[in-house]
Length: 239
Image (cartoon, rainbow, N blue to C red; front, side, top):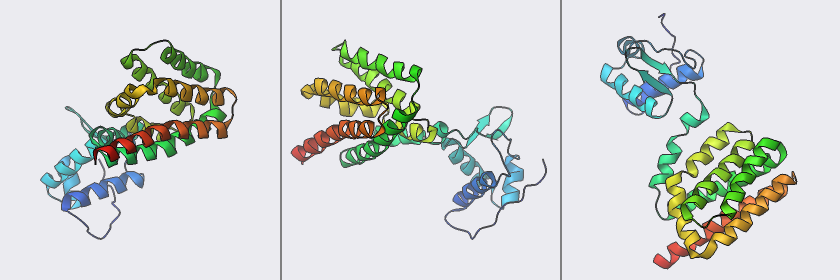
């Protein structure tokens, strides 16, 4: 493979971090594209002026971020750089969050999910709307907590996908990871909030049917806001 010119920048951080930044710059500048194979570890280390061990650590970090993928016996490649792969680490943050950090994640989810609902109200097609309604009806016809939880997650995922913004949907998928959802919502629902949750979901659905972005935005914000307030109160009680 021919040599690739690398954008130079003042050194900062560790050698490994500089290697990470340089590889990311090569991708951003179009010198490496989605699906393209990287030079060998040795060649790339020489090209970037770092040791092979630092290059190995950089590749490992970029693989964890979803930017690179190692194919056994073939080499290291740039991924397709899909939003879902690049933002997968959001799920780790959500899964490991505790206390006030959980509230912060719900605050962020409230902002993004209300925006996604508004976009979905303007863009949702008949098949997507039927999918949202299917999960709504399923939640209404069972009292099994696990089933409600599964359809709850799927209800919001369907709306987020209907918003037509893959990056936003990927972020929300991480913020609404099954583990996080289970930890927060099971306690919320066990305090008699299942009926309230059903009413809030129905309100969001009606706004989607009406193709009313502002009503959908408000309904989604209220829905997540109720959970956020409940969690704040529980944390205050335990302080």
